[in-house]
Length: 314
Image (cartoon, rainbow, N blue to C red; front, side, top):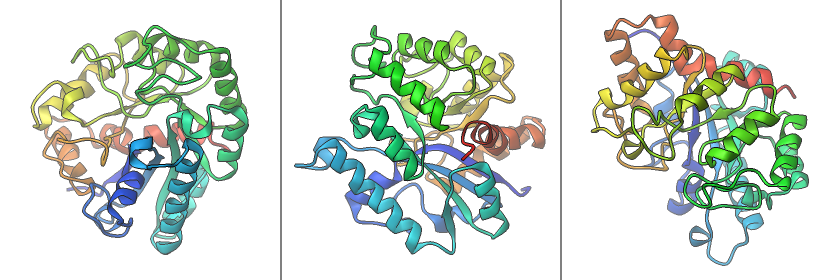
């Protein structure tokens, strides 16, 4: 097995640690640092995500603060192992010190009151990517699951423009189709779908159409393969995941595919992956199909890091 780098675009480990009382170093979740230590370089977008039922009595603003405090606590507790990074350059510095790189995202802008001003506050705290919506429609847009015909509102447009100004990656996973196209029209540069699959391979509203994936290519962005079997449309074997990758490769996506496994946010996971320690099963399966190691490294690490380096500059 060659040395392997991994940059995953979405996990819900912060929420799972909140619910279980666990930490990043070692836990019973899908992601912990002990198991991730097998990789030569490991970077991860940790999503701040939560709904009121998970945080009784808290407002969305308080949920954000609670999860942010947990993330900061875990960064301090594991300072010798992982660093909170805001740019690709900071990630490279962490790698050179033998550390892993943690990037911070927000899933569902309701955690920021859908406010451009709150987005700026989150940016100052180190947030570098934002899903405009989760499953529930909010003041920015409809979603794939609720108000699916609603695109960006005027507030949504202002929010996206503020993200572009700051250097925050706009994440279109969960967004309605009209919202997706509004984002594509507003942004000249990269955006990403951190954890979405191909709607052609499996017709699910959470997945991307070929036109949408092509638009991501045209913007020099990436789509992150989601390993949740319900979005793959197949069984739990590796073939279900590879079918989506191969379809995107046929569309010219070699530099525009990444990973966004949605670990700790879904079950069951495909490809025999029980947690972060098993991503090499998918890596090895692609090598056995005679994909070059250079291509597989791009899918697993380089493509997402390129987008981060282009968008998250400060």
